[in-house]
Length: 409
Image (cartoon, rainbow, N blue to C red; front, side, top):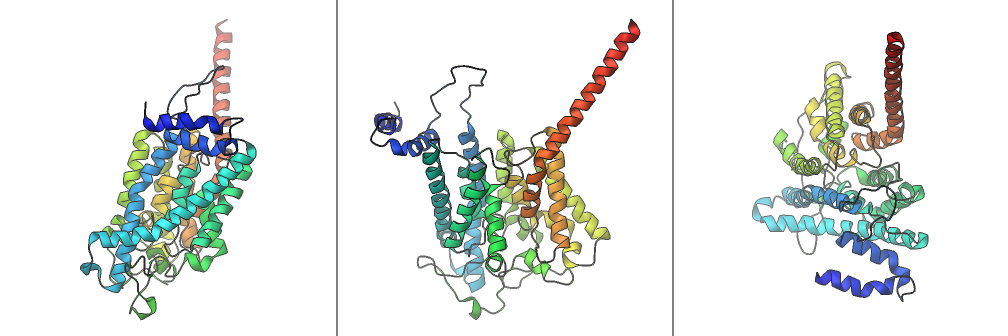
């Protein structure tokens, strides 16, 4: 027998009814079912017996996020040492470790606060711990600036878990994407921390790096979308030290931005895993990009003469959180459309709304977050009308079939 399984079996009685540690039953159950597939099976009714439960699905999403997370860590160090002019003097591991130690506290705070609330609610309800925060816990740090204070991240995480998840009944019952609610909370509560030069880390991390941004000539930590938002007309985008950015810089991800959103290649690797395993809907992913691309192209042709409207349409798809949102946020099976036709409509409208918000609201250059949250609200209605349309078509076929039978008589 697996030694870990044997250990859990030995201590399990202490967490069961009447055991000394019964008050922590939900904690033990969550830990056990995360490591092993539950052994209980249903005794009655029609059920599908499968080892692929929601915890396994959430684990696949977490694995799919790892490429973007690891690259984000490296990019944090890359941007830091690029500003100081010492990038050529430091090695790969110095660059990566600077980013790693910058992001690690945010992951710890996100999971610590979120899972802590999950444990408390589970114990209070005498229920099992919901597994949805396995994904939300890693998403939240990946969609915020690296300079976000830990106390602010903790507050946003607590707000999102309580008011966007638990009040609705927990995992599977929420109507809004939890991670995006945390991001929205930060944006509207602390807007100055979600803009400006907060996308580049400049402090000393465990003795690595560190600089004063006021002493570096030409330093700008603004994201490419941030640069466009303050421009009167579209111009060449630059990096943090004023050098022109190429489209490959944007695709690879060597640009300032949220921790996990900059690399299209890393996001594509995660998308490939999600699609291969069937966890995410390719219809939603594709339709988000189609809707966004078409809308951006139309603004290029007939839009206002503003910088963001005249930016090449393909840049909209690779800058900001558009790709990350399309792959990891819009495809959330809980808050998105579930009918096959509805998925096309849902994704298409997200892409359209994201670009419309970017172009028409100059104070908010990033639109994917609000677009997804808005469509989270309309997803049930989309599915409702898709189902009703199918019912009407079937009723017409029934009437036609009955009419043909009557005519034969």
